Image (cartoon, rainbow over all chains, first blue to last red; front, side, top):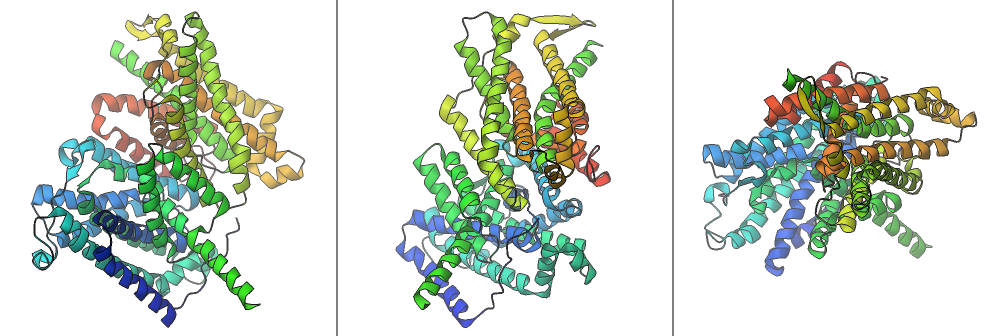
Length: 338
Length: 290
């Protein structure tokens, strides 16, 4: 099956760095300008962006479509909630550590089964395994709270170090809209930078070689299955990290985020933004979050809105928002240049 | 003794519903290499249409229920016949990620489409199952309607087998499944084979939905739930294999029945564990082609 042209080589030029810096500056100023609700939306966007970035290491760079990433997001979320319930820990850093470690464990087990396969079998197997976790979270209600889920009290950030400096302590809204927003932003920036380094490292290049031609990659000495396994682990860890960050924002975790339609949403984000570019999943995560929030607020038939958008997207804009935008920019540049 | 009989009948009952759903999923994959994520919702369409028609015809004698079942199945088949040329056909040349995505979009649309047309409350028309009452087998009392469902499942399996392996169309279908381009070169109208097999698959799923409706009603979310179980069935049996769908349905039906009695908490986990073990040992499933 022929694949569309792959990611163009994008070096880290001064212009691109300046662009990223400008966006970061806007993100830093936002909470001062935006109403609280909008700031929370941006937080959700940042968190989903980390999940979609992790997911895209598999789809965009390794050529594996996982329909089971809800398993990682849910593991990250439940790791935090269970830490509160059973260990009484309330430190965000401990949550993040537990979320990433938990996702790595899940990834190690699932990956051992999944990476033996590619294409549709990989996707379905990932889906199947994620549903095992869902059914466990659903049925073992005395541990996980069942459909009611588990509540998460406001965690301390950096051992309470920044609690004193910003806003009044104990005010949940102020906490989420300021301190927690910046916390998420910092994690997002680090995660994005790490992912950038990964996909531009020799390891990342090897993954792209596997995606483009498995047989050739094998011949030039890439250990295909081992590299896929590592990509699976890293991808899961990123999505798990996002899951952990998501819980304090949402207030509680329910089995819904382990259910496979949630995996579908992560896929949707990557495709909406364009999974053939690095920034695509980030843009897609923001766009999806706004689309969903709008649809849920505007009508009870929000699934219909999402479904129609997805079908239209696949039929009319297969390269996603970023891909379509770059084509348009290219066109404009050519007409103005001639 | 009578509990054993009931357990066996229950697992056969589950198996026949599961087969009706899974055979369409596997047939479509076998011929078109597409996993239709909206397949469970087609099954729900069958249930909703059957329930709605059943409610409209409530004054007629209960035996009209048989017609109701066929109407439900036919409606699901019609939905399939409309969807394949409009939404799926433009995507055959694209990577399979897009095909999976569009059926996921379709799943969302159909899920809300049912809510839009029939509202959020469950629909049910159980005149037929009430009429049939129950009968006694080897000392166990069992609803006659469930026996009827088992027969429908068995008949559907036999009819599908005869259709695929004993008719001219079946030959064309298998040829297309093995090598689509060669089949096209030999003059087989591949487009028509595609739309026909998709329609048959949807018809079967609709029949499954229609026969289960008098027992559990037509409810929102039934499609997604059915899809997950149907995945287990086809993964165990082997994607693209009808025999596999039958054996997979029997296995899943039996495990579910035992599971509900002895390990209700981990029933689904056990099912997926079995699927994972099968895939680990036989990557293409029990009956799949490697």
